[in-house]
Length: 165
Image (cartoon, rainbow, N blue to C red):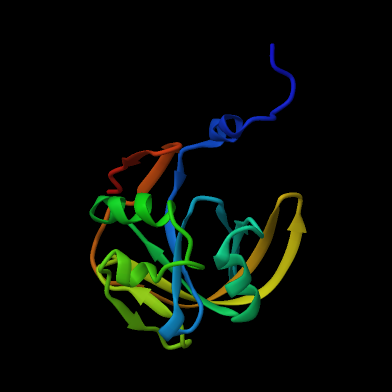
């Protein structure tokens, strides 16, 4: 019997997790990353929590620029989810590399063209939590562009789309 959760695979026991694409930074230098560690914290105000490793480029961008968008994804963006998690925005413009359009969000960040929905957010707080930082974002605008079924990460590079009726 295993008593302690210590391996990367162990946290997948808490999956599936809905995958989002987080876009951070100002429009011109926006960076995106796939993210599964997130949760709703409050309905009023609408607060969302995100766990991001300080080793990630998006972490430093979100520390410097407090505005972001949470882009909801479905199977049409599965390849983008997989590919953007394999490279760093420190070295490459992911929008350009993966030929993804971006649109200007009202908060000065960007959202992913083709995403079924997005939420504009403002960083309100953050806390160090072991090997990740827990960011608290306030959702300031929510836009549903088309109906969709969210994409969930099952484990590692295994994804599943669940039908939402």
